[in-house]
Amino acid sequence: MRRLLPYSAAFLAAILFCLVVPHAAAAARGAQEGLDVALATAIPALFPFFVASGLLIRSGAVSVVGKWCAPLIRRVYGLPGEAAGPLVLGLTGGYPIGAQAARELYDAGTLSREEAERLLGFCNNTGPAFLIGVCGAGLCGSVRTGVLLYGIHIAAALLTGLAMTVRESPQTMRHTSRAPEPLPFSTCLTQSVQQAGRACLSITAFIMLFSMLRRVLEAAGILEHAAVLCTPLLWFLGAPADAAQPLLVGILEMTSGLVLLPEGAGRALLPAMSFVVGFGGLSVLCQTAAAVNGLSLRRLFYGKVLHGLIAAALTMIVQAILPHPTPVFSAALASLPAHPAAGLLFVSISILCVTSSGKKHRNRL
Image 1 (cartoon, rainbow, N blue to C red):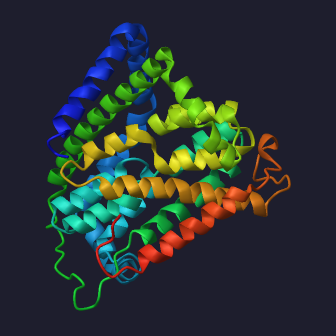
Image 2 (cartoon, helix red, strand yellow):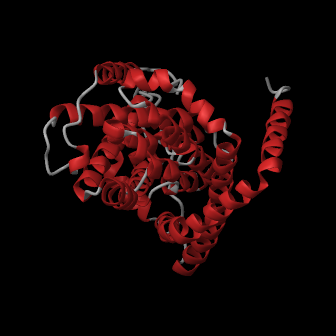
Image 3 (cartoon, rainbow, N blue to C red):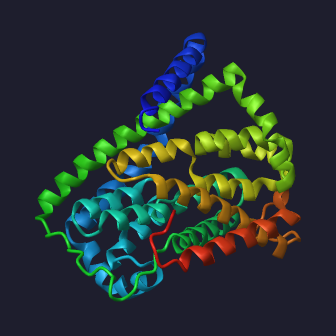
């Protein structure tokens, strides 16, 4: 398999080149759109959290919080208490703040490689500003819907962590984590700003790349043909066929897909939105990969897929419990019926969570 890796990479690079050349205008337009999104939205929102997370870790504040959270985090997730820092930062700051914080704890020696990689599976999440402001108020026309989606997102992240938990016996439980030595504030600040700047540059590049790729795939007609192939799966999930292309775009690049979803998802809007936000898209996964360079991405990928599925299932259940128009949903989203696939999906995920959390050996995720 490793011997085939260079050939597969060369093959994919050749395909990308062959797609971009005949659609150069679409590629340039996509790159410009990605740059506009990065400079106007992503970087202003993420840069303060990058700096803040760096300050909290380098100053030793996360270690203090870790001592308070150690019993709960160790019992529930089998991780040192300091893991609470990246989890909270990821749920409040958005992608990829939590992953960046987990990497910094690994660099400081607070987390082992195995612990950091397992933490990546559920600490890298969308923040409240995006879910409430963009998804709720912007796309659904309801702040309360955004708050509901954010609550579902938090629950899905915590359940994903349970599914990826490795149960250790008291004899093998690790007690060798060490807290990083606190640094002078001036050193903390300069190092945090430098790290935040490098992270923002990397994020801008990936946003431009996937925005360009989306426009090229649209111009070549590939997205339209792929959407047709996804129609049977959408029928099983109770979603209209028109939701296929927005979902594919969301899997590629989260924000663009979410903007398109209200046009084609219909009554399946909220579950589809929950899945896209939970998974994050390939663009976010690449941004995270750059932020945690050196750590394995296997658990991260499986964790985000599981997060998206759990979030969609929980949203379906909420819609089944609240079948009548309520102030939580806007008028366009009211009376959303439950689909039989929701129960099957939820039961399958529940079984996975129970069996995974009960393992005594290294979790396969």
